[in-house]
Amino acid sequence: GCSDVTSAAYTVDQTGATTLGLSHDRPLYSCFAPYSALYNAVLTNPLLNASNTALRVTGRMDTVDWECARSSRDRTRSIGVKICNWGHVAVPEAAKDAYVGLEWTAAFRDVLPRRHPSSPYACDASPEIVAQAGPSWKHSLLYQHRLNNSLCDDKFNPTSGVDAHWSWEVAGPPGDVGFVKGTGGAALHVPVVDTLGGISLHASINGGFIRPITYGGLCPSTTSITDRFYVGGPIQLRGFMHSGIGPRAETGGKSTAGGDALGGDLFYTATVAASIPFPGISLLRDNGMRLFTFANAGTLTGLDATPASAILRSTRASVGGGLAIGTPMGRLEATYAVPLRYGPRDARRSVQFGLGFSFG
Image 1 (cartoon, rainbow, N blue to C red):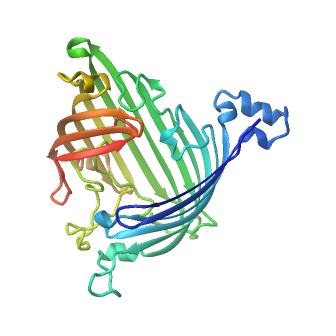
Image 2: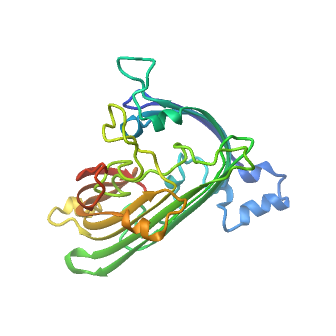
Image 3: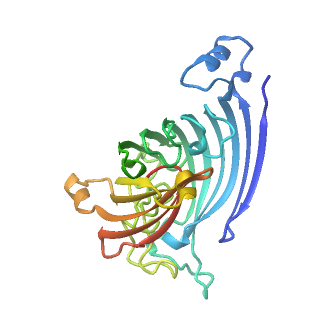
């Protein structure tokens, strides 16, 4: 037999922004005639996941508050259809094993600049953010492949193994934004000696680009702030705040006095680290907590006419140490970082707490 699962979720975050999501999952093989070629292909294809492979239909309305980084909120209303080898998971990173998915999405989006507290008809945001205000329609196809640490000894705090992920997204008509967007990354974890309970070395690199496509003038020749990359924060680039590096407006709203983050079309981050089991307290050590030291680097810039030398010159770097433990919700870490290379307008923070799905 098979089971269909329908779910609904309504959340309110600390800023008052709301999210309403509806989804329906159906095992993909049950959509075809029993024992037909497609029915058997779904159940036997090694890239898929037999009866766990699902057809998912989703609808979503949400508002994401970015006022702390770029003086605006993003309001989105979307519908989508996805085929993936793990049904009933909220995000691909939460799948129990390697994830493969293909998704079509139509989303009506609106950028809402922060309103001035004393003049409600004025905007408390930079001119660059105000210029991006208004609705847009995104029509896209997204392919994702994630190993989700399935080749590592621990899903969220590994000491040995390899991991990788990559994705491609293409947007265009009948939507009014057009682009091709690619991201990818890899991580390596190597145990080196048994001293102090086991020392492991770690290395990771991640990157991505987005390139506008005009489709003969049907779509803008520049990317939207909603689609660009933003870099900084725990797990990604420690020692810098969320959206703490990269292109920035000269001015910003009350919540972004240093200037609104404008995002970029090209980024990379890289991390090297060494870790040991937490010394002294057996309860923490036995539950997988580890001490680690790290050095990370990264940058965020535009894509057009950006030579490799300019990317290297704009690279930020930091070093530090911290604690990390794998939990049922993901990798939880607390770190102290010292930025070594940074720009005069970068938003930096030494003490950080982070929760994520990967090493960095």
